[in-house]
Amino acid sequence: MPTLEITQLYIYPIKSLGALALHEAHVEIQGFAGDRRYMLVDDQGKFITQRTRPDLTRFQLSLDPSGFLVEDKELGKTKILHHSVELGDAMSVEIWDDQVEARIVLDNWSEWFSQILGEKVYLVHLDDTSPRIMKEKYQTSLSKESSFADALPILLCSEASFEALESQLGDTVDRLRFRPNIIVKGTQAFAEDTWKQIQIGDVQLFGAKPCARCQLITVHPKQGTIHKEVLSALSQIRKIGNKVYFGQQFVPESLGKLALGDQIRVQVQQDAVY
Image 1 (cartoon, rainbow, N blue to C red):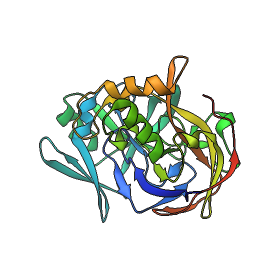
Image 2 (tube, rainbow, N blue to C red):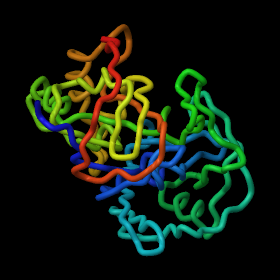
Image 3 (spheres, one colour):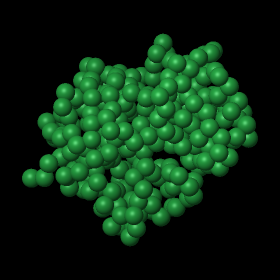
Image 4 (cartoon, helix red, strand yellow):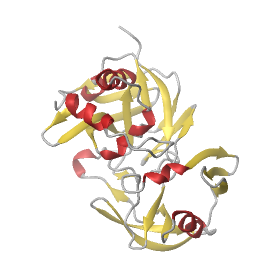
Protein backbone atom coordinates (compact mmCIF):
# COMPACT_ATOMS: atom_id res chain seq x y z
CA MET A 1 0.00 0.00 0.00
CA PRO A 2 1.41 3.44 -0.94
CA THR A 3 2.62 5.67 1.88
CA LEU A 4 0.32 8.56 2.71
CA GLU A 5 2.35 11.74 3.03
CA ILE A 6 2.09 15.50 2.88
CA THR A 7 3.21 17.10 -0.40
CA GLN A 8 2.04 20.71 0.11
CA LEU A 9 1.22 23.00 3.04
CA TYR A 10 -0.46 26.40 2.64
CA ILE A 11 -1.74 29.29 4.70
CA TYR A 12 -3.75 32.33 3.61
CA PRO A 13 -2.86 35.07 6.12
CA ILE A 14 -5.55 37.46 4.81
CA LYS A 15 -8.74 35.69 3.84
CA SER A 16 -9.20 35.41 0.03
CA LEU A 17 -5.83 36.99 -0.76
CA GLY A 18 -2.69 35.18 -1.92
CA ALA A 19 -1.44 31.88 -0.51
CA LEU A 20 1.85 31.15 1.22
CA ALA A 21 3.50 27.77 0.62
CA LEU A 22 5.24 26.44 3.73
CA HIS A 23 7.81 23.76 4.51
CA GLU A 24 6.24 23.30 7.93
CA ALA A 25 3.13 24.50 9.72
CA HIS A 26 2.22 24.79 13.38
CA VAL A 27 -1.25 23.59 14.35
CA GLU A 28 -3.06 25.87 16.79
CA ILE A 29 -6.59 25.64 18.18
CA GLN A 30 -7.96 27.77 15.30
CA GLY A 31 -5.98 25.92 12.61
CA PHE A 32 -2.56 26.62 11.13
CA ALA A 33 -0.64 29.46 12.75
CA GLY A 34 -1.00 32.57 10.61
CA ASP A 35 -3.88 31.19 8.57
CA ARG A 36 -6.83 33.53 7.95
CA ARG A 37 -6.49 35.57 11.11
CA TYR A 38 -6.97 38.71 8.97
CA MET A 39 -9.91 39.57 6.72
CA LEU A 40 -11.20 42.43 4.57
CA VAL A 41 -14.73 43.70 5.27
CA ASP A 42 -16.85 46.43 3.69
CA ASP A 43 -18.11 49.52 5.50
CA GLN A 44 -21.02 47.47 6.87
CA GLY A 45 -18.63 44.88 8.32
CA LYS A 46 -19.51 42.15 5.81
CA PHE A 47 -16.65 39.95 4.70
CA ILE A 48 -15.18 40.39 1.19
CA THR A 49 -13.88 37.49 -0.90
CA GLN A 50 -13.02 36.58 -4.48
CA ARG A 51 -16.61 35.41 -4.96
CA THR A 52 -17.67 39.01 -5.52
CA ARG A 53 -14.23 40.57 -6.01
CA PRO A 54 -12.07 38.26 -8.14
CA ASP A 55 -9.62 41.15 -8.44
CA LEU A 56 -8.44 40.33 -4.92
CA THR A 57 -6.08 37.92 -6.67
CA ARG A 58 -3.97 40.97 -7.46
CA PHE A 59 -2.66 40.79 -3.87
CA GLN A 60 0.07 38.19 -3.46
CA LEU A 61 1.87 37.47 -0.20
CA SER A 62 5.37 36.38 0.72
CA LEU A 63 7.20 35.85 3.99
CA ASP A 64 9.13 38.73 5.50
CA PRO A 65 11.40 38.51 8.58
CA SER A 66 8.95 40.73 10.48
CA GLY A 67 5.69 39.35 9.08
CA PHE A 68 4.12 39.17 5.62
CA LEU A 69 4.88 41.24 2.53
CA VAL A 70 1.65 42.13 0.70
CA GLU A 71 2.14 43.10 -2.94
CA ASP A 72 -0.38 44.55 -5.36
CA LYS A 73 0.78 42.91 -8.59
CA GLU A 74 -1.11 45.38 -10.78
CA LEU A 75 0.35 48.58 -9.36
CA GLY A 76 3.55 47.18 -7.88
CA LYS A 77 2.73 48.61 -4.45
CA THR A 78 3.97 46.74 -1.39
CA LYS A 79 3.35 46.97 2.33
CA ILE A 80 4.60 44.83 5.22
CA LEU A 81 2.03 43.41 7.61
CA HIS A 82 4.10 43.15 10.77
CA HIS A 83 3.46 40.39 13.28
CA SER A 84 3.46 43.15 15.90
CA VAL A 85 1.04 45.41 14.01
CA GLU A 86 -1.06 47.64 16.26
CA LEU A 87 -4.77 46.92 16.53
CA GLY A 88 -7.45 49.55 17.03
CA ASP A 89 -11.12 49.56 17.89
CA ALA A 90 -13.36 46.53 17.82
CA MET A 91 -15.77 46.22 14.89
CA SER A 92 -18.72 43.90 14.47
CA VAL A 93 -18.09 41.80 11.37
CA GLU A 94 -20.17 39.26 9.49
CA ILE A 95 -18.79 36.07 7.96
CA TRP A 96 -21.50 33.80 6.62
CA ASP A 97 -23.91 33.18 9.52
CA ASP A 98 -21.45 34.33 12.19
CA GLN A 99 -21.19 37.73 13.84
CA VAL A 100 -17.99 38.39 15.78
CA GLU A 101 -16.12 41.37 17.17
CA ALA A 102 -12.85 41.84 15.28
CA ARG A 103 -10.14 44.47 15.77
CA ILE A 104 -9.38 47.03 13.08
CA VAL A 105 -5.74 46.84 11.95
CA LEU A 106 -3.97 50.20 12.21
CA ASP A 107 -0.82 51.42 10.36
CA ASN A 108 -3.08 52.71 7.53
CA TRP A 109 -3.92 49.24 6.29
CA SER A 110 -7.60 49.95 5.72
CA GLU A 111 -6.73 53.14 3.83
CA TRP A 112 -4.16 51.27 1.70
CA PHE A 113 -6.65 48.61 0.61
CA SER A 114 -9.49 51.13 0.20
CA GLN A 115 -7.47 53.29 -2.18
CA ILE A 116 -6.44 50.34 -4.34
CA LEU A 117 -9.87 48.69 -4.43
CA GLY A 118 -11.83 51.91 -4.92
CA GLU A 119 -14.23 51.33 -2.03
CA LYS A 120 -14.21 51.77 1.71
CA VAL A 121 -12.91 48.58 3.31
CA TYR A 122 -11.36 47.65 6.63
CA LEU A 123 -8.64 45.15 7.39
CA VAL A 124 -9.58 43.37 10.61
CA HIS A 125 -7.93 40.82 12.86
CA LEU A 126 -9.57 37.95 14.71
CA ASP A 127 -9.87 38.95 18.36
CA ASP A 128 -9.12 36.35 21.03
CA THR A 129 -11.68 37.98 23.31
CA SER A 130 -14.44 37.39 20.73
CA PRO A 131 -13.71 33.95 19.26
CA ARG A 132 -15.57 32.50 16.30
CA ILE A 133 -17.24 29.42 17.75
CA MET A 134 -17.88 26.36 15.57
CA LYS A 135 -21.12 24.41 15.66
CA GLU A 136 -21.00 21.96 18.55
CA LYS A 137 -21.09 18.87 16.33
CA TYR A 138 -17.78 19.89 14.76
CA GLN A 139 -15.98 20.76 17.99
CA THR A 140 -13.33 18.61 19.63
CA SER A 141 -12.31 18.47 23.27
CA LEU A 142 -9.40 20.75 22.29
CA SER A 143 -10.83 23.07 19.67
CA LYS A 144 -14.13 24.95 19.66
CA GLU A 145 -12.94 27.96 17.65
CA SER A 146 -12.32 28.53 13.96
CA SER A 147 -10.39 31.18 12.04
CA PHE A 148 -11.84 33.36 9.27
CA ALA A 149 -11.92 30.25 7.06
CA ASP A 150 -15.33 29.74 5.46
CA ALA A 151 -16.21 27.08 8.01
CA LEU A 152 -13.75 24.80 9.79
CA PRO A 153 -10.04 25.43 10.43
CA ILE A 154 -8.14 23.00 8.17
CA LEU A 155 -8.89 21.78 4.63
CA LEU A 156 -7.20 18.65 3.29
CA CYS A 157 -7.29 17.47 -0.33
CA SER A 158 -5.47 14.66 -2.12
CA GLU A 159 -3.45 14.77 -5.32
CA ALA A 160 -5.56 11.87 -6.59
CA SER A 161 -8.74 13.90 -6.14
CA PHE A 162 -7.27 16.75 -8.16
CA GLU A 163 -6.22 14.29 -10.85
CA ALA A 164 -9.76 12.88 -11.01
CA LEU A 165 -11.11 16.39 -11.54
CA GLU A 166 -8.48 17.08 -14.20
CA SER A 167 -9.46 13.88 -15.99
CA GLN A 168 -13.11 15.01 -16.02
CA LEU A 169 -12.18 18.54 -17.09
CA GLY A 170 -9.60 17.51 -19.66
CA ASP A 171 -7.18 20.15 -18.41
CA THR A 172 -4.86 20.89 -15.49
CA VAL A 173 -6.22 22.59 -12.37
CA ASP A 174 -4.33 25.03 -10.16
CA ARG A 175 -4.63 23.53 -6.67
CA LEU A 176 -4.92 26.96 -5.09
CA ARG A 177 -8.37 27.45 -6.61
CA PHE A 178 -9.55 25.23 -3.75
CA ARG A 179 -7.67 27.00 -0.93
CA PRO A 180 -6.30 23.79 0.66
CA ASN A 181 -4.12 23.78 3.77
CA ILE A 182 -2.82 20.24 3.28
CA ILE A 183 -2.34 18.27 0.06
CA VAL A 184 -1.41 14.60 0.35
CA LYS A 185 -0.34 11.79 -1.96
CA GLY A 186 -0.54 8.02 -1.78
CA THR A 187 -4.31 7.58 -1.68
CA GLN A 188 -7.14 6.94 -4.11
CA ALA A 189 -9.27 9.81 -5.36
CA PHE A 190 -11.63 11.18 -2.69
CA ALA A 191 -10.48 8.66 -0.08
CA GLU A 192 -10.01 11.62 2.28
CA ASP A 193 -13.81 11.75 2.53
CA THR A 194 -13.64 8.66 4.74
CA TRP A 195 -10.98 9.91 7.17
CA LYS A 196 -12.68 10.58 10.49
CA GLN A 197 -9.45 10.77 12.48
CA ILE A 198 -5.86 11.01 11.27
CA GLN A 199 -2.48 11.16 13.00
CA ILE A 200 0.47 13.13 11.59
CA GLY A 201 3.42 12.96 13.97
CA ASP A 202 2.16 14.35 17.28
CA VAL A 203 -0.81 16.04 15.62
CA GLN A 204 -4.24 14.44 15.62
CA LEU A 205 -7.04 15.83 13.43
CA PHE A 206 -10.77 15.14 13.40
CA GLY A 207 -12.39 14.79 9.95
CA ALA A 208 -15.51 16.79 10.70
CA LYS A 209 -17.21 17.22 7.33
CA PRO A 210 -16.72 17.41 3.56
CA CYS A 211 -16.21 20.80 1.96
CA ALA A 212 -19.04 22.16 -0.20
CA ARG A 213 -17.67 24.21 -3.08
CA CYS A 214 -18.94 27.35 -4.81
CA GLN A 215 -18.01 29.70 -7.63
CA LEU A 216 -14.77 30.63 -5.84
CA ILE A 217 -13.06 27.65 -7.48
CA THR A 218 -13.80 29.21 -10.90
CA VAL A 219 -11.44 32.12 -10.09
CA HIS A 220 -7.85 31.71 -11.26
CA PRO A 221 -5.81 32.30 -8.06
CA LYS A 222 -3.28 34.62 -9.70
CA GLN A 223 -4.97 36.06 -12.79
CA GLY A 224 -8.45 36.71 -11.39
CA THR A 225 -10.04 35.35 -14.57
CA ILE A 226 -13.20 33.22 -14.38
CA HIS A 227 -13.35 29.65 -15.72
CA LYS A 228 -16.80 28.22 -15.03
CA GLU A 229 -15.78 24.91 -16.58
CA VAL A 230 -13.97 23.92 -13.37
CA LEU A 231 -17.12 23.98 -11.23
CA SER A 232 -19.15 22.44 -14.05
CA ALA A 233 -16.75 19.50 -14.37
CA LEU A 234 -16.66 18.97 -10.61
CA SER A 235 -20.45 19.01 -10.37
CA GLN A 236 -20.63 16.13 -12.84
CA ILE A 237 -18.71 13.82 -10.52
CA ARG A 238 -19.19 15.26 -7.01
CA LYS A 239 -22.73 16.63 -6.75
CA ILE A 240 -25.29 15.56 -4.16
CA GLY A 241 -28.56 17.45 -4.08
CA ASN A 242 -27.68 21.07 -4.78
CA LYS A 243 -24.14 20.91 -3.37
CA VAL A 244 -20.79 20.03 -4.92
CA TYR A 245 -18.07 18.61 -2.68
CA PHE A 246 -14.27 18.52 -2.80
CA GLY A 247 -11.89 17.97 0.12
CA GLN A 248 -12.36 17.15 3.79
CA GLN A 249 -12.42 19.69 6.63
CA PHE A 250 -10.53 18.90 9.83
CA VAL A 251 -10.50 20.23 13.38
CA PRO A 252 -7.46 19.86 15.70
CA GLU A 253 -7.59 17.26 18.46
CA SER A 254 -3.98 17.88 19.47
CA LEU A 255 -1.41 20.56 18.65
CA GLY A 256 2.04 20.32 17.11
CA LYS A 257 4.02 20.75 13.92
CA LEU A 258 3.45 19.37 10.41
CA ALA A 259 6.07 19.31 7.67
CA LEU A 260 6.36 18.35 4.02
CA GLY A 261 7.00 14.62 3.72
CA ASP A 262 5.30 13.76 7.02
CA GLN A 263 3.45 10.47 6.87
CA ILE A 264 -0.26 10.24 7.66
CA ARG A 265 -1.90 7.43 9.58
CA VAL A 266 -5.66 7.01 9.24
CA GLN A 267 -6.86 5.99 12.70
CA VAL A 268 -10.63 6.00 12.23
CA GLN A 269 -12.61 5.75 9.01
CA GLN A 270 -16.20 6.66 8.23
CA ASP A 271 -18.66 6.26 5.37
CA ALA A 272 -18.49 9.04 2.80
CA VAL A 273 -21.63 11.11 2.32
CA TYR A 274 -21.66 10.52 -1.44
